[in-house]
Length: 397
Ligand code: PLP
Image 1 (cartoon, rainbow, N blue to C red):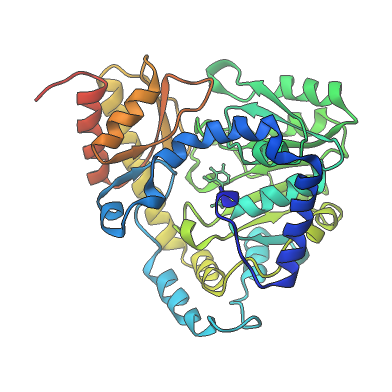
Image 2: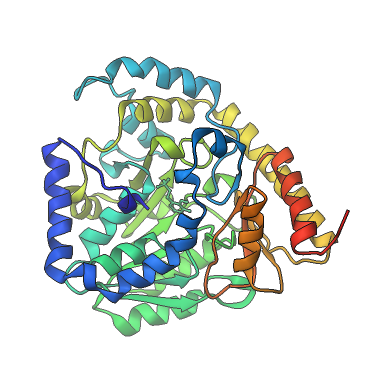
């Protein structure tokens, strides 16, 4: 999505990196590359949600359950830290709130193991550029968060996308086999945990099975954007694999739990030899002063983040049981969103919600009868439920 909004920057380093990526894309003729068009089509409903085009007043009145955002906004402490950082708005070099050190301490790694990005999307792009250029392939499942595949399409790198297995789980034996079958052309394995759009986790044993099953030199990107919402005891963060020196890149974001989506702050963690491959493509100036100070404070304000987590989980469980009560299956989610099986085509349903001022998730092929819904406030979810009864369940009042 970042590429939908061309970023004009005076910064020389930004320019050179973008020029490099642009140069690769231009050399490969990416504008004419059919993969781009496929992705453009897949993204079309996102754009159709129109949230970015709405006037400020209209936007405020919409019920926004489409991007897995945090409906509560940043904690007060974070707002205060960001407000304090406004005085650096005119500077390039300024105290950064110790954000990299804070992240490193939070995970028990060295600052050199941390790469900051303007959202974790930037880290996914960096990984794609660093690890896929030169005809390498990315291996992962579908549906999942498509950013790495989209970036790969722009680089004319192939993506091997495997269907989900039983119960919409990521099929680890199939992933291992695909990686081995395509070795040495695999540049990257992408594993979203919990997966977006399903909310289903990969267990810690399955992660180990994947890492042990594939050639050790192949990097595995484990996207933990929704880590904070997981309750399942079979799940664990993959950071210990980094400490063990495995070729693992874990990505995290402040967009969800810390409600900083609009501020753009995320990061990657990796062992030093993998970091050395990624860092040349990173841009030291992409993250702004407010995001740095806000992020550092968010890491400290654990009580505020726990409140968000508890509220979101409570609301998700309530709405899931109400939908189940109406006879619709909800996939077991460990995230701040869930999928409900409508047993009918999702596209017109999305449109009907839109007409009622409610933005819900786009279609996720091939799960075209499932609707992805982000968890909003209790009030927003009761609007959603009323609309669901009318649109999907055919209940009239
Ligand atoms: N990874 C996953 C799985 C996501 O769902 C998202 C956003 O929705 C991102 C990464 C990107 O988040 P951001 O760039 O805001 O950190």
